Image 1 (cartoon, rainbow, N blue to C red):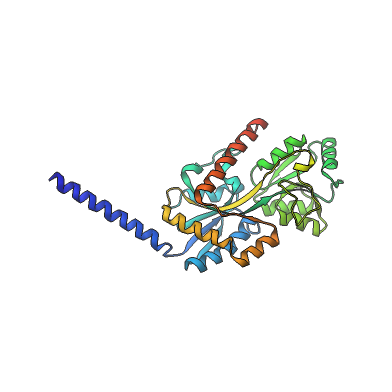
Image 2 (image 1 turned 90 degrees about the vertical axis):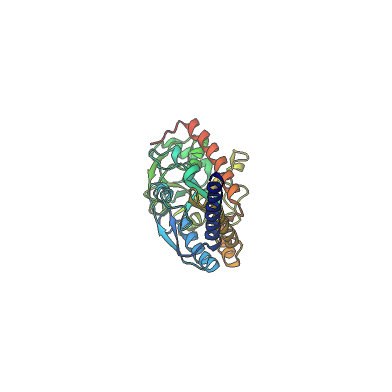
Length: 320
């Protein structure tokens, strides 16, 4: 009798494993939702909508983009964390999603357990930029002006404290008043109108700010100078040797998503980053691209979480 029960259990396990394997090999068999954790017009939104078309062509199923902006990307992440881990609900997010718990109370997910990294998509350095009403043209002039007018310059934040921004403020020794907006696009609009006077921007926004005469970039947070804005010096050459900081966007699935499904999506996204049309778009907008495995993306997140945990601890920033 014991042998019979053992044999039955073995065949049930084998059948279950075969069914799961078949499910992973057949993925996707229906439409896939991609939640975007930022508002329309943000970098994550724009690149995800382009990616959805490529993924649909490659994987032969619709990839439907749904915006879930708010709380600096946390609303979308929290919805994903509650989703079934079957590969049919994904999240396109930015790197701040993974260390939001350092600055924000009531984060209702643990990224290590509830989110499964798939692949990074695009990223790059950031431009510390000011509105045209701020009477400065260099970083040194900006620091002098900010110190002479403590707290009088409004800094546009896209939902949560940006650790790169906070790190720069600390290094420069300046006091800016942070104003929180519901995403990068509303924050940028506030800078364009002069409602806020300072923002750390993605490259294409910094270019638009200058081209429209609404302001100027003062310093770049990565190395070397960006070829699309070669007149903007880096922080590294402005008194902070070796400094780099920036952003990246990527795709994640709910925790517990089968590894076969994650691998299928990872390969598709990495192929997307090599597609000639997408490469042309990335180059036009000055984006860096990646070719990560899920494990490499996980390691990148771990390194950034450790880095910014120390940054916020040193600054005395507590979750609010």
